[in-house]
Length: 409
Ligand SMILES: *Cc1c(COP(=O)(O)O)cnc(C)c1O
Image 1: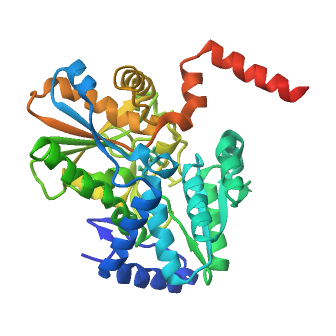
Image 2 (image 1 turned 135 degrees about the vertical axis):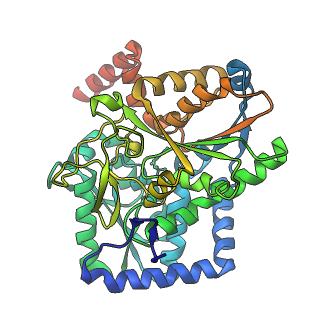
Image 3 (image 1 turned 45 degrees about the vertical axis):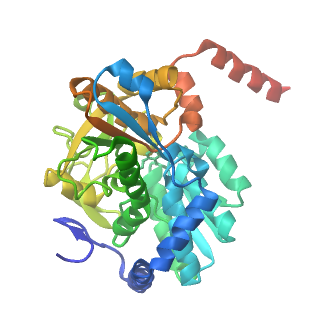
């Protein structure tokens, strides 16, 4: 198979000026991969700085409540900065150090990848510029605040719809002019080769740990593994622990938004979602796009799943039938989140709650001696504005108004 392709998906569709930069990146990545001391350095760093290995929690109360398969939760929420994103950015940070570059750039939509990248840059002493659509800068003020306090420069992008894809274009523009000393930290298993493969490699630490942990706790492989899918990095992370175990069913859960039939969703793999093959943002995958190839507006209550494309690796695994894809609606997500909080005391991020929805639908129909793992990609604390608004909590509104009044004085 051609390098960087997964079946018909993937590739590296990049402007000629970036060929040399990508050649250098490929060389550094392949050398790191061939050098076991690099992986050990990465594992040590994650143990020392980001709470790895993260626990595999047996969700005893949820298991009893739902009355079927044993439910285990892989706790990526306990990573530094609250999600699996730390695995990727810290890995790329080590690689940047190895390449001798001094500056990193990234694009961010909801701001989570921006905060993670700014954190990594602070730790390694890199200069850091984060591109963010002007619209998103306004919507995600708390994350912009943290990025700036971590020492990053946040550049609001005023082109186009002033959201994620415009920020991505601007980041590529920067890279063309700065590639000698700058690395572009792509945030998920998408974009041109080697990013999908490289990010999947860093995230595989989730699956490596989970496989060992489930063997120790349950004594055999799980029957099913669930993960939410935005770009696909947390899903690829945990799935890699089980891809070679044909008895383990892998389920990717996409953002169903207001329902697939409404068109207001961010699902690219489920039946009827409307996604079609295309080449954009440097790679080939299934995109939510018009017949003319214009990217469509997507919707999800979970900002991290609100993306037009999907990992080429997952597009291939879906096409081959190795990963089953489902979707969860915004409403279902809120219900699963409430249940997890009330009876298990865990608060999954809106994104992660999508995986919980599908697991909760299926677990009751399974036998008590079966087991499933839900990948909890992140913690819900970051979502307090969205969650409180969605629950229409009156005392929260009062609090916000009171705070605003204090600032007006
Ligand atoms: C960013 C994010 C996601 C979506 O990204 P993937 O690459 O699909 O994993 C999911 N969950 C959380 C908590 C996130 O922050």
